[in-house]
Image: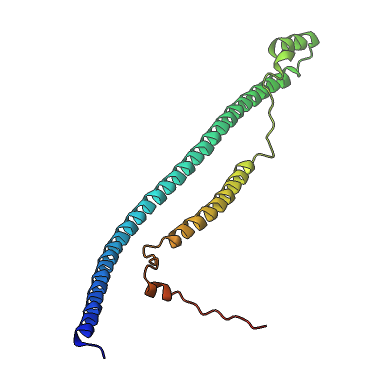
Length: 201
């Protein structure tokens, strides 16, 4: 028969064990509450940093787009300036040729062959007949290589973006603020006890 003193001692041990468990749980509660606040702070900081980085990316993209547009516009202006200069030269040459042609038509009515030849030679030397360089238009001009390069760049960026975002998403989901404690007591180890069936065959 168990004495009252022995039974009381056992109850006292159970009471101390219960008090220790309460202390442990309260400590765990405080740690989790602190972790919860830390999680919120880190989440907000990560979101703010994400906003900053995305804003920087958008700014870089807009800046690159602006630079491209300015370059295309500059090239167009250069080409148009050359075209305009050539058009003006052609118009001057055509006007000059028409004026000479009119004079030639007028002189062609004279019956004096010597006078005719002298006037032609003085007013319209052979060396001045083709004094303006000829140009041809480029039928392949289309900025096609520019569009092709932009399309390739877009596909390349999308591939890198998908790969890196997959890694980032994996890193986000891998972050755990609550981790299971390592078993320390016999009761802790018993939680991981799994029955093993041994075959008799």
